[in-house]
Image (cartoon, rainbow, N blue to C red; front, side):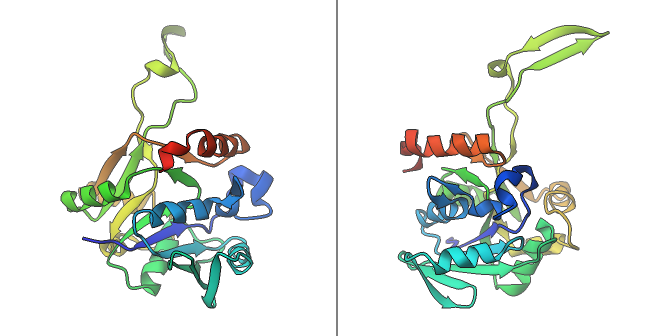
Length: 246
């Protein structure tokens, strides 16, 4: 079964990266002269996805300005662009203060979607989207998330009666799987979006309770961009580890 639409969360304020997000939305931060959201679009295009719905809000004009002033893109109509790969990029204003669950609900009420990809506008990965999609349909659940295991930042201590009983170095720690985004979802997710709330809280928790959320374990590259340091890591990786993104 084919999926040709990817929905991208891009409307938040990115308060953890105020050095740049006081001027532009986080998905428009450039990594090696290309906005994060464009890196993400390019990744999906490599797997044949050619319809994109970018859920904007905070400083939404930044997206329009970029696509209007870049020769790679051609404006089709208000808030809709195409590029040299014949992809369509739809910019949907979902409000400056709206939470992720509310943004997705607006998208599902605006566009006719069956099965679709969904991700955040600040995470870069080389996840194999074909394998992710195949895994999702085999699981036969409403949603599948990509679970990633980022390197631990610190070691762990175990403490008993005020004494350290175990010290674990970072390399000794057990894998800690987290939500890396890169979802596949059925439009049935709308039944779990009751109000404007973080999608990651009650909606996903209720999917878990109903055994309708699967996890695809991705052990390859994944990097979120919440800080200047993380942006520097990503920019270096895009050059030094470019073979990972082919």
